[in-house]
Length: 166
Ligand SMILES: Cc1cc2nc3c(=O)[nH]c(=O)nc-3n(C[C@H](O)[C@H](O)[C@H](O)COP(=O)(O)O)c2cc1C
Image (tube, rainbow, N blue to C red; front, top):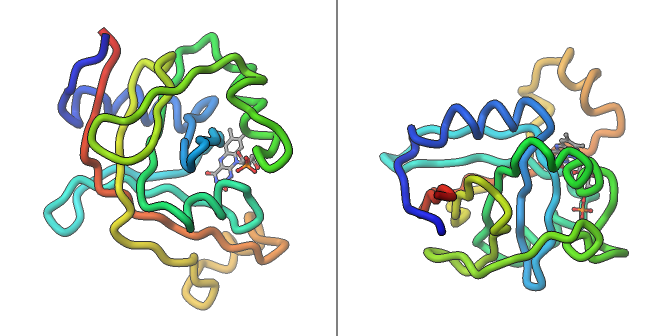
């Protein structure tokens, strides 16, 4: 069972996991899970917004470019192995959900899917996107994170539903 909750009910756990083993960004139909470690949650344009960053080389990038909706799913602590798998293998060649024994259900507020094994899932609709712009980026960050110049696309997802397992 899941219940709809407020942003502050999930913020600590979501950010802790983002900064830890990662959380899953789920996009596409059929859906593909990709582990992410970078993102922000806050308020822009008087809306709740979650940003996620996807490098163009990822399979998830082509999925995110072809749909507007996505979910982010926070898995319990004992899903380390699955998070590592979804963060090192591409859904271009394999069905990561099947390989990790994870299931999916349709989102409630958006046209995407979420993983019911997650403790929290956040449903989003992209309202803006842009590439990280090297001309205005700190050179230290460019050297450290973009030796291949594969600058992320940043997706601004309006948060339309926040759900917690009960
Ligand atoms: C902990 C962790 C965090 C990651 N964070 C991101 C991220 O924020 N953005 C990104 O583009 N890739 C990130 N990756 C790499 C992708 O998850 C990885 O390349 C994945 O295999 C891509 O899957 P796909 O080709 O199915 O989209 C991360 C990987 C790990 C292990």
